[in-house]
Image (cartoon, rainbow over all chains, first blue to last red; front, top):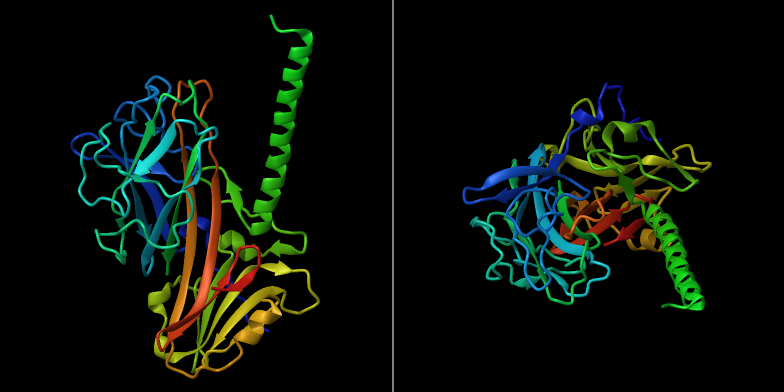
Amino acid sequence: MYSPLYKGRNQTVENKMAATFNWYQYNGADTAETSLGTGGNLVNFMAIDTAGTAGYDTNPITAGTNSMELWLAAKFGGTFNKIDNLQFWQSTDYSPNDGLANYWVENGVTAYAQPSTATATATDAVPTSDPGAENVYIGGDTGGSLTAAGASDYIVLQLRTTTAAAAGDTSLAEFTIQYDES
Amino acid sequence: MPSANFMNQKIDELLKIKRRALYDLEKSVESLYELGVTFVSPGEDGIPELSSAMKLTERYEKTLENWEWKVIYTDGSELDQYGEEDHSFRDIKLDKIEKVLLISNFEFDTTNVEKRAVITLNRDGTFDFLNCGPMELRGKLNKPVGEGWKLILFKRFRDTFTAKTGGGRVEPTGEKILYKRYFLGYEINGIKTIVCAYPNGEVRLE
């Protein structure tokens, strides 16, 4: 028989100890930072450099062109021993996905650059299944980790389209990040 | 101009797609629940759906952890992950470990006095399982490896977000899912032995 784990402390969800996690987006020439939160529809692909989801309807991507890059980072706070082994993939594709493809930079980017519609940066296809190994670095190094509050390297996403893309809204594409906390 | 027959066929086709989508939705959500995936609104923490043979302990609402760890030292003292104070891996006195336990924050409908699932890593490297773990796994992990192993103890989080583009005909929506797995094991002579505890109560060897 094990002794009770709970010892009567008036602990609440808010004061429990664990790492906190939030997505952040970066825009403009001077790294304007916007907290996006976690889960749900956090960002949209648009033709302009702006944060979050608003304005996607008035700034759609014309079929055959590319979206403005999304510069994102996973930020961790709270109390933890170590955060490492970040893995990122596109867990759900667009449906239909005709003429739609998401690109990124394998392992992330350490130096910020103003988002662009050019295809020079995000040149790798986003993995469409659990990569099984770290593919987003921390501090630019494989095996990098956080032992105090900090962020992943930049995750740069871009939606490229062809003229085969249907007019109107796409379905939601889903992206997943996985990390280890001790 | 399309014939009445053509229009009926088109309606039938679309109804079939709609009903198939609803069927797939229901089935996929049911399967996700069985895996221990929790759906929550963004910004909320969420209470998982469990099978009828399981129920959450009061403690889950305090910590939102499916499993928590506890260390028993060689002198009999204990360190709870969420005890009088909260602790992380760095607080564990690694050279004084007698046992490391992963204890579930859900209970099984069982005649056992202890209804929680408990995985115990003993000082000699053997594992004990209470209310969890297949027999095959128990057989593999009951051989002592001696002392001097390096503890492996961490959680693995999965977090998702969605994105789209378009002309704004449909308001973007999204959902947040919670899925945490808990790993307990050791490394000795360069070989890792790790047990993974899932939010649905399953236990597997990694």
